[in-house]
Length: 479
Ligand SMILES: Nc1ncnc2c1ncn2[C@@H]1O[C@H](COP(=O)(O)OP(=O)(O)O)[C@@H](O)[C@H]1O
Ligand SMILES: N[C@@H](CC(=O)OP(=O)(O)O)C(=O)O
Image (cartoon, rainbow, N blue to C red; front, side):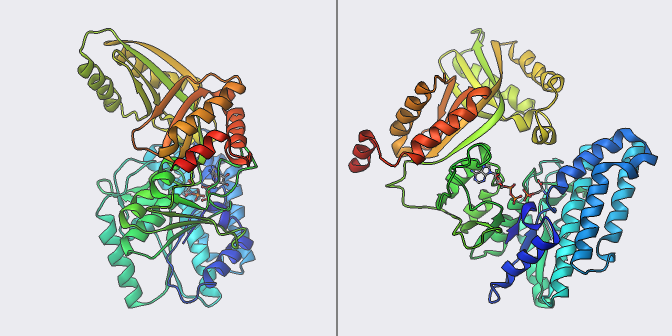
C-alpha cells in the first residue's frame, strides 16, 4: 500500500491512514509513504535559498521553518516523543548550513536533501503504529536494496533491486514480524553509494517495485482523488473516475503527463502481472481504478484525455546532405548524444517534426514549480539546434502542448473524427499529429494558450454528451 503526500499531510491524516491499514487485519501489507504534504517542494526551495543566504540566515529560511513546524506539530499531536525526528531535523539543518557555506547545490546534494522528507514521514508513522499497538518497522529504501543508476534526480531502478528487496523484507518478517514502513521515492546509486531519487512522484514506483519483488496479490496506491480520472480535475472539474485501465493505457497516460501516476511505475506491475488499484484516502469507499494486463475493450472509445504543457517542437527539414535513412539516424543520434528524449514524432521523406520532453531538457524541479527561466531553456535548446543545423534547416516552436487521447486503438478513426470536429468548432488548429500502429495513444499538438479550452471541449464531447452520434453507434455495432 502506497500513501502519497496528500494522504499523510498531517497528524489527522496519519491517523486515518493507520485506520485504513488496520481495516485489513488479515493482510500482511508493506506500506510505502511519501513525504508529508508539500515537504519535497519546500525542501527544494529551502535548498535553493540556502545557496544564496549565508550560514547565519539559514534559520530564517521560511520553507525550513515550515518543514520543522509541520513535523514537530505532527509528532506532538500524535503524542510521540520528539526524539522520533529530532536527529533528522538537526541533520537537515546542518545540511542546509553546509549548502549555505559551500554556496552550491549539486544534484547529488539535492537528492540527499529531499530524502529527509520521506525519512521523516516514515519514522513518524512507524512510531505512531507502534504506539497504538501495531508492530511496525521503519525502513529506508536505500538501506534495503533499492539499487539505482547514479542519475541524481531521476534515477532508474536496477534489476538487482528485486532479489535484494525480497530477501531483506522476507528475512525481516521471519526474524521479527512487523509491518514494514518504507520510504518511497529513494534509492542508492550503484556506483556512488549516495542517496538517489526516482523522479517526482517516484513513490508509486517504489510501491510497484516492492509488489513485483515480493510477487504480491495487489498493489494499492492511495491518493487524494477517486482514482485515475477522465482528465486532470484541476483543468476541468467535471472529470470522472475511469474504473478500469490496462497497464499500457496507464503507462501512456502517466508518460504523457497525468500527474496521478509516476511514468515508470507501471513497468514492474506489468512485468510481475500484479493488479494496481488507485484509491482515494479521503474517500475510501469509492471503488477507485483497477489497472490490469487486459480489460474488455469492446465498448470502450476514449478512456482519458491528458495534457502536457510547455512543450518545445522542432521542425527539421533535411538539406539533403544525407539520404533518408542517414538523415533520421543522424537526427536521433544528436538527441541521444545530448540526452534529450523525444515524445512525439511525425516524418515525411525529407523532414521530421518532433516534440521534446520538457522534463528532459531542463531541470525537473524548475518545470514542477513553473516554467524554467527562458534564458535557461534557450541555452540548452541552442545547443540542439546548432548540432541539427549541420544537416538541416530547423524551426523551433515553443509554448506548445501535447493533448493525448488515450483510448481504444480499434476506434482510432472514430476518435480522431470526433476530436477534429470538436477542435474545428473551437477554431483550434492542430499543428502535429502522432499515433503509433498499435498504441493506445493519439497525440495532437496545439498552442499552449489553447490547450485547456481544448481539453474542456473534448471532455464534453467524449464524456458528457450521453447520446452517441450515429457514427459512434454504427462503429460500436460493427464490432
Ligand atoms: N487524469 C488524472 N486523474 C487523477 N488525478 C489527476 C489526473 N491528472 C492530474 N491529476 C492530479 O494528480 C493528483 C494526484 O497525484 P499526486 O499528487 O501524485 O498524488 P499523491 O501525492 O497523493 O501521490 C490529483 O490530486 C490530481 O490533481
Ligand atoms: N515526495 C516525492 C515523491 C512522491 O511520490 O510524492 P507524492 O506521492 O506525494 O506524489 C515527490 O513529491 O515527488
